[in-house]
Image (cartoon, rainbow, N blue to C red; front, side, top):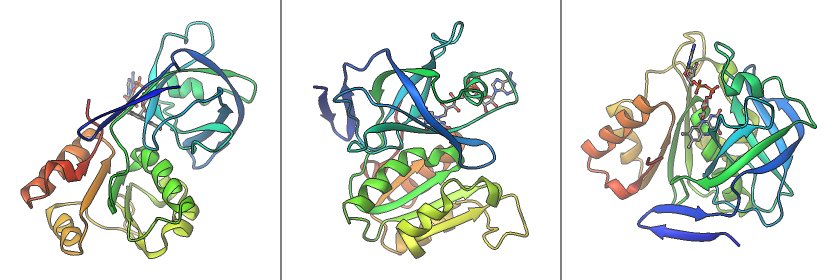
Length: 239
Ligand SMILES: Cc1cc2nc3c(=O)[nH]c(=O)nc-3n(C[C@H](O)[C@H](O)[C@H](O)COP(=O)(O)OP(=O)(O)OC[C@H]3O[C@@H](n4cnc5c(N)ncnc54)[C@H](O)[C@@H]3O)c2cc1C
């Protein structure tokens, strides 16, 4: 069995999962550039919702090109799932993932990552940074523990919103979209700036979960700390 280690809020699973080949069961485009992969699950495979693994493609020339992706499935599902933004602007791993079909295989490695659920709060995601929160929010929903948790999801356009319907169903009014690049959208709004963070703090958010492009995560972390939010109340990926 994998061993779970907890150091402060750093959670890490020492796994026996390195280099396991798993077959793709099915794929689905969930937006114009985000693809869902459902995969065979090795026996007794476990992770903490929010955690990731390094993934490579089981094809000649691609096996040693590892990229991190987050599990969006839950432990009690009988398959693994990744939700992956495909970049077609260069010949990288995600471009190649965009060409795979059911029956092809990926290689998954050790489970790692510091994003995990602590206590109720606000989840702030930018684009594909939503993926760790998919697993966490699905788990809370399944356990009837969604409570006052809130999701603030920032995207450039409405067509970039991943799993919009599912989040609407899980969170109702606590699902807040921000659209940064489409003035016609009802959610067209400025970025998650200092004033917006203060508003969230004033509304009672205790914990902040932040994932997205590095400049966004760093900016929000600095903004929260400037308003007095304690370091251990800000959950983000720590490298
Ligand atoms: C812990 C963790 C978990 C993650 N989980 C997920 C997840 O669940 N889903 C998800 O979608 N992403 C996730 N990511 C991000 C994901 O790992 C990257 O998107 C992926 O590694 C990109 O791989 P790539 O080989 O396609 O691109 P890379 O070659 O690694 O390039 C990445 C970026 O650089 C740009 N770039 C690089 N080279 C060129 C070039 N020559 N021309 C033009 N542009 C270029 C790409 O457009 C892209 O923006 C996660 C990242 C981390 C750290």
